Image (cartoon, rainbow, N blue to C red; front, side, top):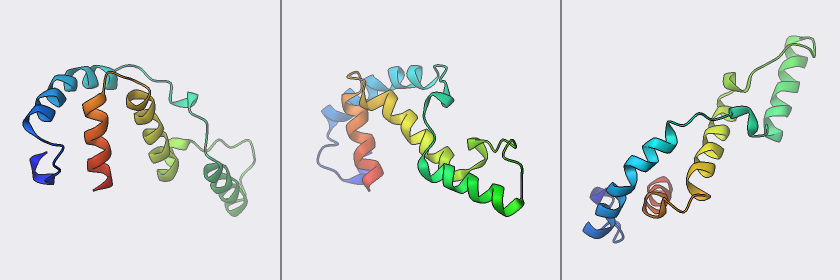
Length: 102
C-alpha cells in the first residue's frame, strides 16, 4: 500500500486497515444471491442483439455469467453492497477507492 505513495496510507491507517481485513474476508465469503442485482440496460440490449444476430428463439436463455460486461457490473455492485453500505469498512473502503482510481 505504501508504494502508492498516498499521504493517507500512513502507519496508523495501515494498522486500522489490517484490523478490518478479517471482517472483509468474512463478508466476502458469505453467500450472495447474484440474481438479486438487476440486469443493466446495456446487457438487455446486447442480449437482444445476440438473439437477432444468431436467430435464436426468445426462449433461449443467455446467462449474465457469459457476458463479460454484465459479470463485471454485477461484481462491482456486489462490492458496493458489501462495503459502501457497511460502516464496518471505513479504512478498507477508503483504500479501495484510492487504489481503484489509481
